Image (cartoon, rainbow, N blue to C red; front, side):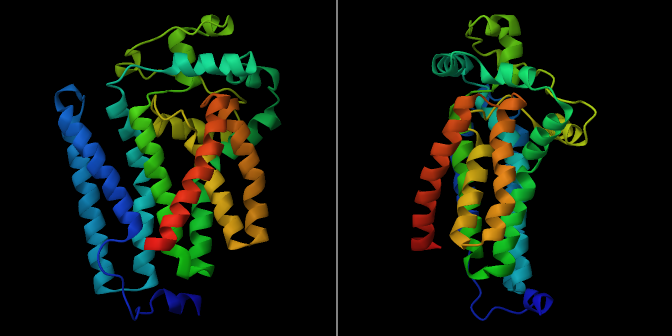
Length: 318
């Protein structure tokens, strides 16, 4: 029965691009405008333009496929394409924000004032147990699987809200990416190395200016290096991590939104499945030095605001 529904032709197929695709196109248009205004300062403007062209072409191509065969399966393809493209959009934020002076010294200083230490520097030093390390890296590695879990739950069991949920998830990502473009904060793994770990340990947070415009070296990821999940996180970082996107933590923000979507579905099994990974995620972002503790707090606050706003608009327009 489930397989049959995948191919059932919809009686009233959706026309034009949908809200989740317009959210991506809006982000594309905004960053394209920024690119045109700063074209001579960009390091790779041609590849960025070609990348945006491919995003538009692939979006229109799958829209065309859906119009030819308007069913649940082709709708799923449209959503999955935009989710898959998130891994391309993320490092793209670095190509723009590297033009601006780094602000990590401000955020590390705020961290010091709030906690009287640097949690990201001390956490992995104080708790170096291999099992705990693997739990932390498991939590961090669960990010994309959790996104897939919530997306497919709504697709399979609450299809009437599927495109609304896709809009909330993708629009949330685009909003976070807008922040990352204009707020150049790299996080501890990059800033501590650039500033000097010794300086950080003594409570000194030098302004590194435009250092990250030409440098992308990071500290080794803390934890048990022979662990399976450690290797998963290390491989992911090697493939797509850039000195960008620290405040607020989108890992914490998006997983908070996923938890809120599970609560919206009133499905206890989904909530209880996400909850332990969510707790691990919030701890792991600081443990592996991807984020300051204030980034986690920023992720919580921003997620609640973004979710409330997007849920409101989704009920009005999706």
